[in-house]
Image 1 (spheres, rainbow, N blue to C red):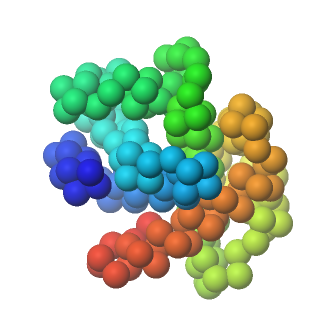
Image 2 (image 1 turned 120 degrees about the vertical axis):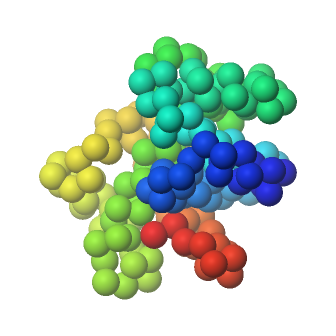
Length: 185
């Protein structure tokens, strides 16, 4: 499933930053799938493909993306999770898949931003440091801090636990991707 999802993503995404974001969200989704006892490949594919239309159709995102995903044969739960990750669609997030995608999208990017400014990258990064950066409105200012808090509540997890789950998933996936000649950073 992952190879197929990667091939589809490469057809629509050429920007390195968007590819890395997609890989980071995939990593976080895989981490939560393990935590919740869900299908890691399916959840990972949802994270990987959630922004499939963003590069070519940013104003219509994610509506064009859900049409692409329908054509590719993804089921309604998968499609609704992708649709619901954007507040602009006013789509209720009713499944754990949808709530998790919404919860990890902004946070994955924020943690990667934290990693990028550290000389030791992931090594030694703690929740305390991430939360300190969350308070700094000038740092990664495009990231919606309120959405991060709101989405953790919606998912039903404590913010510290949420940050740790995503951080752990990103760190593990970075090691795996390095073996494939890829990176989140």
